[in-house]
Image (cartoon, rainbow, N blue to C red; front, side, top):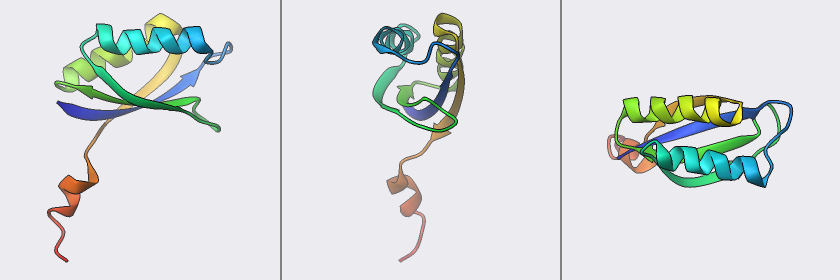
Amino acid sequence: MASYITLLQARPEGLGPVRLAELRRAVRDNGGRLRDYYLTSGQYDAVFLTDARDDETADAINAALETIVDVEARTMRAWPSEDIRADVPD
């Protein structure tokens, strides 16, 4: 599975417990796995760390997040630092 980071910006209501539960369900129901999430301050209200089998699945999750709970979601592929460090000489 590939890793993805999603930046979430809630519309006026913000992200309470019910909306967060809906977001978690949307990830699962669209074929992804939510590894962790963080509530944040600043431009974005939350960051989701998810796994999905491919970019198409990640796109479906992103679309579901925006539709179901009225948030703006920006999703990007992420690679573990161990994968990158393996290519960097000491």
